[in-house]
Image (cartoon, rainbow, N blue to C red):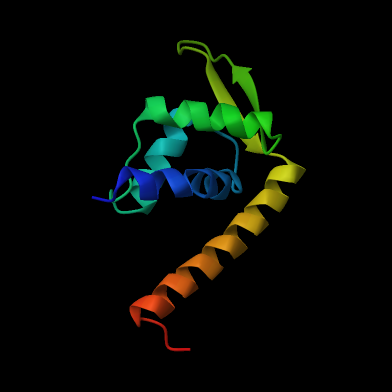
Length: 110
């Protein structure tokens, strides 16, 4: 529904926002984004993992492997203190960006 470039530019913000609630594994993150967006935002799971790794390298999230009886092991990710700061910055940037775009489009009431 949306271009891959639009989705790509918002993926980190979406993941940070999802992980602000509780730790999750990658597949859960992808499915929750789909559900919360009314299925309008769908990411291939294979495209989600490189972003998770990049965010882990930035110390925005921390992953740990969890093994449960009867299931394969999964990597659960949680937000770090730096991730919470990044989320606040990303939300502010997104808000300013969408306000500017809406103003150009004539959709702003300001």
